Image (cartoon, rainbow, N blue to C red; front, side, top):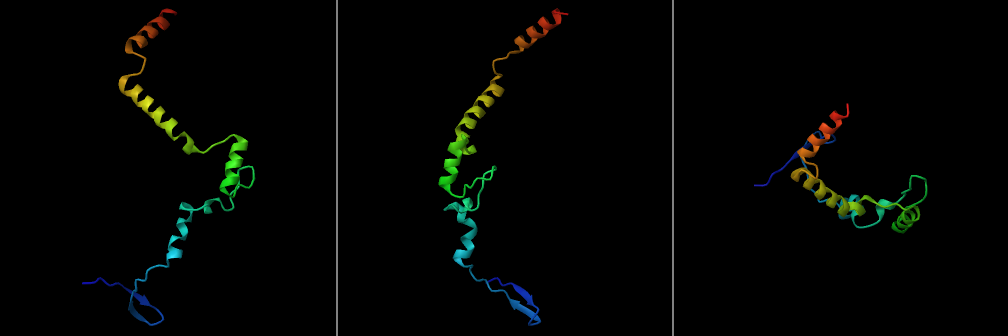
Length: 110
């Protein structure tokens, strides 16, 4: 059994079956253009107003100004995360005895 849906057509004054036409391929994929091309660079400008509307211009601008994108730090952040997790699970280099000794030393200065 096929499922059908109907909509009210005001011009005809009655319910008509909604047709399910496949979208035009080009129109359906236009919004995904950034995935396989450089469309996301179109009209792009840096914060100082310089034109970076192509991959090459963007790369040259970044090299000239000594900046990079966040994805360059992916491995750095992953290593830092491992160090933080290790510190929090194993207690790090500070022991309870160290804290007690420091408190006692500070109190003895009074």
